[in-house]
Image (cartoon, rainbow, N blue to C red; front, top):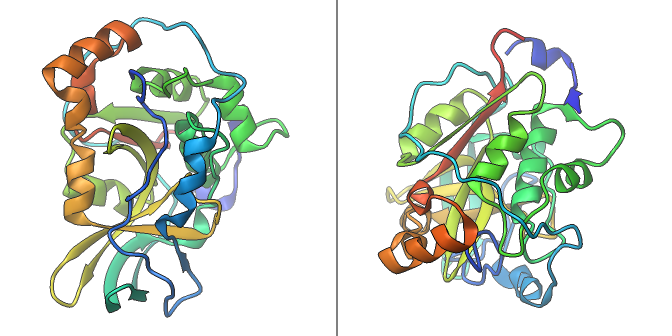
Length: 285
């Protein structure tokens, strides 16, 4: 596995740790835009509940990593010229909504949807690597990631994501906890797509943040590429309050679940407090 070398690259958990039953992800269901983008609805999440676990699911755990640190400065790079300002007009269930957005060009990140109930991490990481130009010796990105980082029955731990990405030549990965929306903005401004983990009901879900928007009345929104979507061109839109509440992952981090997750998943539940993955190209490559 190695990184492609296009011109832009020269510049620069327990039972539901990362399962993906994500009903109610969107507060509204955007249907159209003044651009060529398509926006997701929550109707496509229903089928995830009936999916089985991935056939390559692991049954053993490795040792958990140390507790993650908070946000820090980044020395890696993303894609140049991809972070744009654009206006998006959405038709929602309550009317028309216009957002002023700072976002990675959604056309630059190809959506990859998950195939099973426990492989949202594999799809989200495949999306991120494909965006950065990582090649996989002829294999499709999802297949390569799923074989190199197979999920456990309940999903995929942070420790497994960092271990897998750390083996890819020319790539830098740092997982941080206690991240903020402004920290995400900083990574996005570097041209990086940012995988995060949200708690949606009783289920943990990986998706990829690509930008943020603000409505005319000052309401903030977070734009994501979501592996739960079968429409790979869709962009999920969440109100900031919905996103940040889910990003806290408080269900996993409460004392009882923390003990259970530590025992069953051999992980550090405290790591899931607003976790973000800084994935980029090593600056000296």
